[in-house]
Amino acid sequence: MRIVQATPEHLDLLTPLFVKYREFYDAMPYPETSRSFLEKRLTRKESVIYLALADDEDKLMGFCQLYPSFSSLSLKRVWILNDIFVAEDARRQLVADRLIQQAKKLAKETNAVRLRVSTSIHNEVAQKVYESIGFREDSKFKNYTLELDD
Image (cartoon, rainbow, N blue to C red; front, side, top):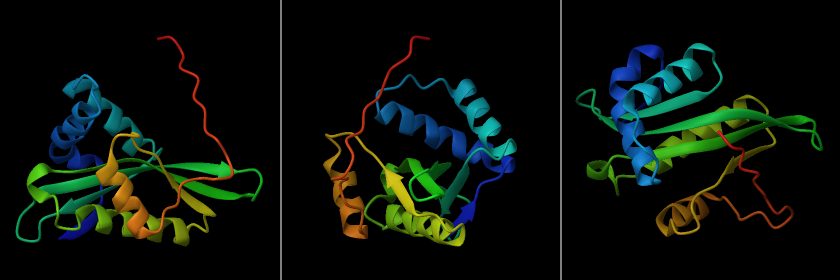
């Protein structure tokens, strides 16, 4: 397996798996809008996307997308591991582990203070993966969201 940073040239490969990721979390697929969303993130350099590719072909096994943020308390960068998804036929092959290790490498290279991730409270598989890599549930801060109308 190879881990590469996505470029706009990877959109045809990435978009179908990104759509499956959205469907996994019960979002409408919207393939064209999803492609446009990814293209904007990549061309504007608003996110970093890593792809896990099979060694022998350009088959996408999984991806992760990170967004930069900052911590006013530590005066340093924070990376938000916002999206991570592994194709069904590539699961149990340590794809998520490899993607997260690459994300961790990016965080260290950019002198980030932390890497943040969240998942559905029902996604116990993801929770176990994150904990096995060293992520810990936040015990200092309680997170809230404010949904805004479209």
